[in-house]
Length: 226
Image (cartoon, rainbow, N blue to C red; front, side, top):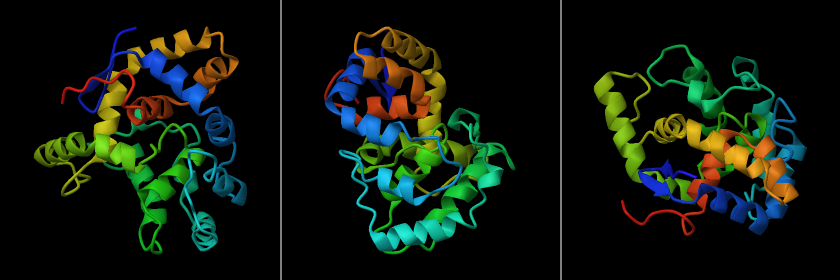
Protein backbone atom coordinates (compact mmCIF):
# COMPACT_ATOMS: atom_id res chain seq x y z
CA UNK A 1 0.00 0.00 0.00
CA UNK A 2 1.04 3.58 -0.60
CA UNK A 3 2.00 5.72 2.41
CA UNK A 4 -0.61 7.93 4.05
CA UNK A 5 0.54 11.33 5.21
CA UNK A 6 -0.13 12.33 8.81
CA UNK A 7 0.84 15.86 9.84
CA UNK A 8 3.48 16.06 7.13
CA UNK A 9 4.97 12.62 7.80
CA UNK A 10 4.29 9.52 5.70
CA UNK A 11 3.02 6.38 7.39
CA UNK A 12 4.75 3.84 5.20
CA UNK A 13 2.76 0.76 6.20
CA UNK A 14 -0.77 1.95 7.05
CA UNK A 15 -2.27 -1.55 6.93
CA UNK A 16 0.38 -2.88 9.26
CA UNK A 17 -0.18 0.00 11.66
CA UNK A 18 -3.93 -0.54 11.67
CA UNK A 19 -3.63 -4.30 12.18
CA UNK A 20 -1.10 -3.71 14.96
CA UNK A 21 -3.45 -1.29 16.72
CA UNK A 22 -6.44 -3.62 16.49
CA UNK A 23 -4.47 -6.55 17.83
CA UNK A 24 -2.68 -4.64 20.58
CA UNK A 25 -5.78 -2.75 21.66
CA UNK A 26 -8.59 -5.17 20.89
CA UNK A 27 -10.31 -4.37 24.19
CA UNK A 28 -10.36 -0.68 23.29
CA UNK A 29 -11.80 -1.34 19.84
CA UNK A 30 -14.58 -3.49 21.28
CA UNK A 31 -15.32 -1.35 24.33
CA UNK A 32 -14.88 2.13 22.84
CA UNK A 33 -15.30 1.97 19.07
CA UNK A 34 -18.21 -0.44 18.77
CA UNK A 35 -20.65 1.87 20.64
CA UNK A 36 -19.66 4.89 18.51
CA UNK A 37 -22.63 6.29 16.64
CA UNK A 38 -25.22 4.28 18.55
CA UNK A 39 -26.69 7.26 20.47
CA UNK A 40 -27.68 10.68 19.09
CA UNK A 41 -26.78 12.47 22.36
CA UNK A 42 -24.44 11.91 25.27
CA UNK A 43 -25.63 9.35 27.78
CA UNK A 44 -24.22 7.87 31.00
CA UNK A 45 -23.47 4.71 29.01
CA UNK A 46 -21.31 6.64 26.54
CA UNK A 47 -19.44 8.47 29.28
CA UNK A 48 -18.66 5.08 30.79
CA UNK A 49 -17.38 3.94 27.40
CA UNK A 50 -14.75 6.71 27.39
CA UNK A 51 -13.18 5.02 30.41
CA UNK A 52 -12.46 1.90 28.31
CA UNK A 53 -9.00 0.29 28.56
CA UNK A 54 -6.29 2.37 26.86
CA UNK A 55 -8.83 5.11 26.10
CA UNK A 56 -8.87 6.04 29.79
CA UNK A 57 -10.60 9.41 29.72
CA UNK A 58 -10.64 9.53 33.54
CA UNK A 59 -13.83 11.64 33.39
CA UNK A 60 -14.80 12.14 37.01
CA UNK A 61 -18.34 11.76 38.32
CA UNK A 62 -18.60 15.53 38.70
CA UNK A 63 -17.39 16.06 35.13
CA UNK A 64 -19.82 13.39 33.93
CA UNK A 65 -22.75 15.19 35.55
CA UNK A 66 -21.58 18.45 33.94
CA UNK A 67 -21.40 16.89 30.46
CA UNK A 68 -24.79 15.23 30.81
CA UNK A 69 -26.40 18.50 31.92
CA UNK A 70 -24.96 20.22 28.88
CA UNK A 71 -26.13 17.39 26.65
CA UNK A 72 -29.73 18.28 27.51
CA UNK A 73 -29.39 21.73 25.90
CA UNK A 74 -26.74 21.01 23.24
CA UNK A 75 -27.54 21.88 19.58
CA UNK A 76 -27.47 18.22 18.52
CA UNK A 77 -30.09 18.71 15.81
CA UNK A 78 -27.78 21.13 13.97
CA UNK A 79 -25.24 18.36 13.40
CA UNK A 80 -26.47 15.26 11.51
CA UNK A 81 -25.60 11.84 12.89
CA UNK A 82 -23.60 11.09 9.76
CA UNK A 83 -21.78 14.44 9.70
CA UNK A 84 -18.20 14.14 8.48
CA UNK A 85 -15.19 16.34 9.06
CA UNK A 86 -14.28 16.31 5.37
CA UNK A 87 -17.52 18.23 4.70
CA UNK A 88 -16.80 20.85 7.37
CA UNK A 89 -15.04 23.57 5.39
CA UNK A 90 -13.73 26.32 7.72
CA UNK A 91 -13.86 28.78 4.83
CA UNK A 92 -17.65 28.58 4.63
CA UNK A 93 -19.98 30.55 6.88
CA UNK A 94 -23.09 28.89 8.31
CA UNK A 95 -21.92 25.46 7.16
CA UNK A 96 -21.00 22.18 8.82
CA UNK A 97 -17.92 23.74 10.41
CA UNK A 98 -20.02 26.40 12.11
CA UNK A 99 -22.43 23.81 13.49
CA UNK A 100 -19.67 21.49 14.65
CA UNK A 101 -17.84 24.36 16.34
CA UNK A 102 -20.97 25.51 18.17
CA UNK A 103 -21.63 21.98 19.40
CA UNK A 104 -18.05 21.52 20.56
CA UNK A 105 -17.89 24.91 22.27
CA UNK A 106 -21.16 24.17 24.03
CA UNK A 107 -19.28 21.50 25.96
CA UNK A 108 -15.83 23.08 26.07
CA UNK A 109 -16.51 26.64 27.19
CA UNK A 110 -17.14 27.27 30.88
CA UNK A 111 -15.93 23.75 31.62
CA UNK A 112 -14.89 22.72 35.13
CA UNK A 113 -11.24 22.28 35.99
CA UNK A 114 -9.68 19.17 34.48
CA UNK A 115 -12.15 18.81 31.63
CA UNK A 116 -9.95 19.47 28.61
CA UNK A 117 -9.87 18.66 24.92
CA UNK A 118 -9.04 14.99 25.42
CA UNK A 119 -12.07 14.25 27.61
CA UNK A 120 -14.52 16.36 25.64
CA UNK A 121 -13.42 15.03 22.25
CA UNK A 122 -13.41 11.39 23.41
CA UNK A 123 -17.02 11.84 24.49
CA UNK A 124 -18.19 13.73 21.39
CA UNK A 125 -16.45 11.32 19.01
CA UNK A 126 -18.79 8.60 20.26
CA UNK A 127 -21.84 10.68 19.33
CA UNK A 128 -20.58 12.01 15.96
CA UNK A 129 -17.72 9.60 15.06
CA UNK A 130 -17.29 10.91 11.52
CA UNK A 131 -16.87 14.49 12.67
CA UNK A 132 -15.01 14.84 15.95
CA UNK A 133 -11.41 13.71 16.11
CA UNK A 134 -9.92 12.60 19.42
CA UNK A 135 -7.73 15.48 20.56
CA UNK A 136 -5.62 13.66 23.12
CA UNK A 137 -2.08 14.66 24.01
CA UNK A 138 -0.52 12.38 21.38
CA UNK A 139 -2.52 13.90 18.53
CA UNK A 140 -1.99 17.44 19.82
CA UNK A 141 1.76 16.86 19.76
CA UNK A 142 1.72 15.23 16.34
CA UNK A 143 -0.33 18.03 14.75
CA UNK A 144 1.19 20.96 16.63
CA UNK A 145 3.21 22.28 13.69
CA UNK A 146 0.60 21.47 11.03
CA UNK A 147 -2.10 23.16 13.10
CA UNK A 148 -0.01 26.32 13.34
CA UNK A 149 0.39 26.36 9.55
CA UNK A 150 -3.34 25.73 9.09
CA UNK A 151 -4.22 28.63 11.38
CA UNK A 152 -1.95 30.97 9.45
CA UNK A 153 -3.47 29.87 6.14
CA UNK A 154 -6.99 30.45 7.43
CA UNK A 155 -5.98 33.91 8.66
CA UNK A 156 -4.49 34.79 5.29
CA UNK A 157 -7.60 33.51 3.50
CA UNK A 158 -9.85 35.65 5.69
CA UNK A 159 -11.73 32.84 7.41
CA UNK A 160 -13.72 34.05 10.39
CA UNK A 161 -12.97 30.67 11.97
CA UNK A 162 -9.21 31.26 11.97
CA UNK A 163 -7.89 30.74 15.52
CA UNK A 164 -5.03 32.92 16.73
CA UNK A 165 -2.50 30.09 17.08
CA UNK A 166 -3.43 26.56 15.93
CA UNK A 167 -6.24 25.10 13.82
CA UNK A 168 -6.21 21.40 14.63
CA UNK A 169 -9.49 20.57 12.92
CA UNK A 170 -8.42 22.28 9.70
CA UNK A 171 -5.02 20.57 9.65
CA UNK A 172 -6.58 17.18 10.31
CA UNK A 173 -9.28 17.77 7.68
CA UNK A 174 -6.60 18.57 5.10
CA UNK A 175 -4.97 15.21 5.77
CA UNK A 176 -8.34 13.45 5.55
CA UNK A 177 -9.00 14.95 2.13
CA UNK A 178 -5.52 14.12 0.86
CA UNK A 179 -5.72 10.58 2.22
CA UNK A 180 -9.19 9.74 0.89
CA UNK A 181 -7.93 7.24 -1.67
CA UNK A 182 -5.34 5.78 0.69
CA UNK A 183 -7.88 5.31 3.48
CA UNK A 184 -10.26 3.59 1.04
CA UNK A 185 -7.46 1.20 0.03
CA UNK A 186 -6.58 0.62 3.68
CA UNK A 187 -10.19 -0.13 4.50
CA UNK A 188 -10.50 -2.55 1.58
CA UNK A 189 -7.32 -4.42 2.47
CA UNK A 190 -8.26 -4.63 6.15
CA UNK A 191 -11.68 -6.08 5.27
CA UNK A 192 -9.87 -9.05 3.72
CA UNK A 193 -7.62 -9.63 6.72
CA UNK A 194 -7.68 -13.02 8.45
CA UNK A 195 -8.21 -11.38 11.84
CA UNK A 196 -11.96 -10.99 12.25
CA UNK A 197 -11.63 -7.96 14.53
CA UNK A 198 -9.46 -6.15 11.97
CA UNK A 199 -11.98 -6.85 9.22
CA UNK A 200 -14.91 -5.72 11.34
CA UNK A 201 -13.10 -2.57 12.47
CA UNK A 202 -12.43 -1.70 8.83
CA UNK A 203 -16.18 -1.72 8.26
CA UNK A 204 -17.24 0.13 11.39
CA UNK A 205 -14.62 2.80 12.12
CA UNK A 206 -14.91 6.22 10.48
CA UNK A 207 -12.16 7.75 8.35
CA UNK A 208 -11.60 10.22 11.18
CA UNK A 209 -10.85 7.34 13.54
CA UNK A 210 -8.72 5.45 10.99
CA UNK A 211 -6.50 8.47 10.46
CA UNK A 212 -6.38 9.03 14.22
CA UNK A 213 -5.05 5.51 14.73
CA UNK A 214 -2.28 6.15 12.19
CA UNK A 215 -1.44 9.37 14.01
CA UNK A 216 -1.57 7.71 17.43
CA UNK A 217 0.79 4.84 16.49
CA UNK A 218 3.86 6.88 15.49
CA UNK A 219 6.46 4.24 16.30
CA UNK A 220 5.43 1.76 13.63
CA UNK A 221 5.50 2.74 9.97
CA UNK A 222 5.85 6.50 10.37
CA UNK A 223 8.79 8.26 8.84
CA UNK A 224 11.03 10.14 11.24
CA UNK A 225 11.48 12.97 8.77
CA UNK A 226 9.76 16.22 9.69
